[in-house]
Image 1 (tube, rainbow, N blue to C red):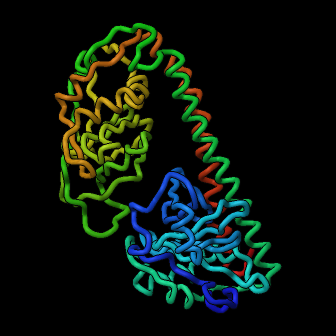
Image 2 (cartoon, rainbow, N blue to C red; image 1 turned 90 degrees about the vertical axis):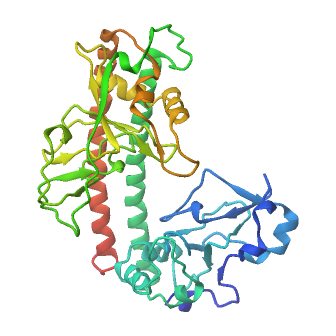
Image 3 (cartoon, helix red, strand yellow; image 1 turned 135 degrees about the vertical axis):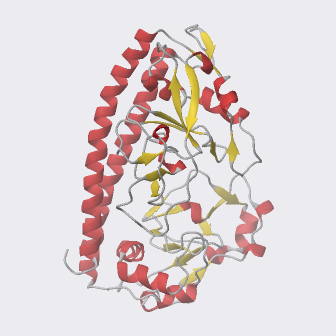
Length: 402
């Protein structure tokens, strides 16, 4: 059990200070760092938003200080997410949504225990069986102490953790490569056309209505109950486009009795647009490279219907609608209260004014971006293989087969 491999001292397993002990107004712009659930990722401590408290407040909460090698475990949100405090971390304490565990290093290797809490099916099953595995459920130090984990000899723990660490590092490199390729495509756009907001190349301006006849949507269909992988038709979720890339797997089955109109089917070459979403994702766009013949548009996703003869390349518009200038204009035109679902009307989208470079330059952009897309597809396939290998390694590691 986790409680049996904790360091034999008071406070070896400690939950962060109660909310009343650390209030929002006590945070400062610098000082001692406060770690929260947003900092803890599976086997990785990372955050772009840092919180601090002044030295005077820290003295009241010094018992919550973390040390290199401590485990950090989330006890709210997605509970049980775990990482190890790395060497060289600035002086830091935990918030009320984290539990820190100092392990007895003669019995347990922290990276191994972190992996066990993250991906060992036996441990995950215990968390779920306790009724505390759901999103936003609570998890406390008493439950953590009772978790049972497989515990091979220390040398074997180190070997297993090292294998998983190296495999995970390869996955991280592939993800970084994908991010760099996405940045390259955006760089090609800006190099050829400039920032649409400043329009340094003095391209003609026109409303979207000059090259789009309409935005055509589908229908909100109640999904079929249960999981049916053999469903005849499936309707897309909004999440199929929110990453700015088309994800056909983000769909749900519709009842077998439903007969969709032809206009509701997603087609190869469609440029899809989310008319409703959270404020930062309304107007997300994704280009459909390929698609199964049974996917349907919901009412919250539109396809662009182009004017003929065409004056734009769909892939150019896809890149254009991802630029900061167009994203901000969509956000300004969308309606809805802050923090809630926002919507934008077809009329407001068609009225947005954009640059319109010559069609021959748009096609040159599509050619260059297509080469980047090819590299991205190769990297994405490699990442998929690494993910499958990593899942296999995780299973074998805690089944004694690695």
